[in-house]
Image 1 (cartoon, rainbow, N blue to C red):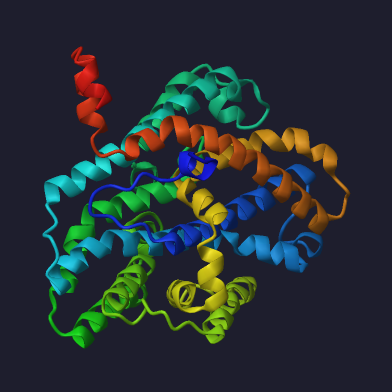
Image 2 (cartoon, one colour):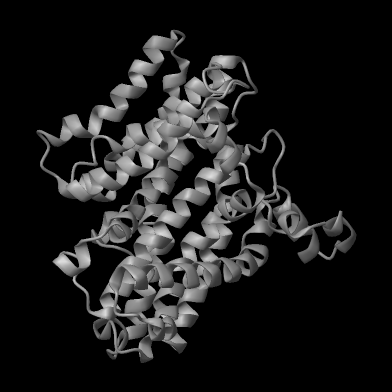
Length: 395
């Protein structure tokens, strides 16, 4: 068994591995890495990103657009979770059993998440409370109570909805809270696939994509749009729309074109440009849809998104995402010595060095704390092991 196989995701019954999806996950996680490397590097270097020094330059603009990787993750989730329901309602596929659906979400995603929170607690006790940053959190007499309160809120995925703030100390967990809201409501939203007419079905999905924009014009509730699924619904529905096109044969084809490659790379350029001009929000879900389609229809894009190195890293995105912010925050204290005092060059250096280290460490974390829970039967084996039936546990 080679290294790729050791680090590859475990596919369960009824699931087919689509390399291009993990290739898109690679794009998303590398964008998020770039965005957070930029933010933390700028803070430690004393650079204000809104100033001419910080805001100018192609590298800075490109790294700044990396936050759109989170929205791409949302679209990917819409596609992956929508696919079984779409097959059931549109193609006569095997019915989705809701008990199995929710149980799978719980046994697959919750253990790595809880382990991460426990490790963050240990990190806080041993390291963070001795650091000069965040004195209001970690250098107060009640620091442990505050930490447990923050982590407890994260445990129930409630930081955004309850405190209207990012989780502490691992602020990137906010997007996982949105994802969980979608997991809970996906079976209800997927009822849209019950519409027998393809045009009606797609118009209904597009209507859901446009819903937040329409509500925002007359509902003045920023919290609702910022911390709930509603604000990010267009991206999840973009995944639903791609799912519909995918199952109806509009995407899966052996006939690929370089014109779609232009769309693939052009959408990235558009995301960077629109983000720099502050005009990205209404267009981003459609750019995500274009990236999806081009990854399957473009000759170069299809090949690139199917490369084993990219799909392997993309398959570990959950682990990388949960730990990358903490690792960047720690690594910068060492890599800051590599400063050239040229901001765009420093960004490139920090990104290359940190990405290599983060991915290497994440390989270990993935193998230990995520991959074992990808196996659908791990709860049964664990119960057999605890009960002393070691033979059954090893089957």
